[in-house]
Length: 350
Image (cartoon, rainbow, N blue to C red; front, side, top):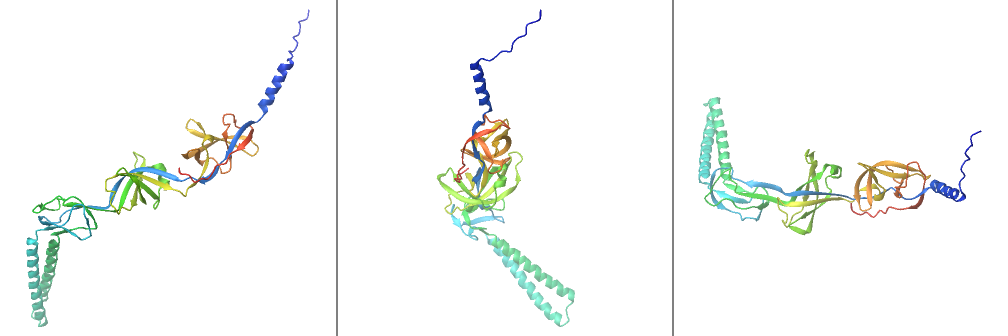
């Protein structure tokens, strides 16, 4: 007896209909919404914390050791360059000048007499040269004595504002004693640190705005004057120096300041934020070509602002990226573009 063959199982009409519907649905392109990558105005904002520094700053000290006879400045007042700040006892210096001047008069007299004897051929050349050298030595000695006399008046080396007085009349001062301080604070400097990743955005002349906790309602404006040539290997930051007007003297050396650098002339390539698909530490977008086919492409992103992301590399202007439907998009698959969104160039801050 021959074995019975199993007949092929036929699908019922209802099941067959459902299978056909599923097959048609699976082959239908997935609907997505795209947006073209666009180059727009994307201002650069860099913030850093800084410290105010005087444009010029010095500790006022005497060059010689002598007692104070007069104090000619008031604490906190503005002084011009060359203003006498402190007078020292000049008795000894005056005497030294008088003695040096007398020696010079004597040597010049001796030299004139030597000139007469030389014309009469009654003086050896060596003797004449000795008297000539003596006069030069006495002139130098007088210059030194006059310099010491000038040092009995301690003057401001530049215009600025003097600090607290640290000596009194009768005090013995010298090169090791600080009499007061002198600061030129208009303009004033601010040194601030920024991450090394922003180094390419720092350049001389870039505008900055500065805020201080002492004047919370006021914004001080200036510009970048210079950028340090070295990056701190520990903090990975670079120090920049800004300069800003300070006519009213509100900013003082040592103040803690917040510095913001803004470049408004920067244009860069951006895509909508929802187009970025992160995968661990990498970033991807789904690019749709002219035939509706999807390509998964890695990109390098930069700055962000609400709704937009800067694309540094991996994408060209005009290429369309999926902004809605990224979960359904598959590399190599064909999708149906149901809407194309536009990116507005509103010049907003970043």
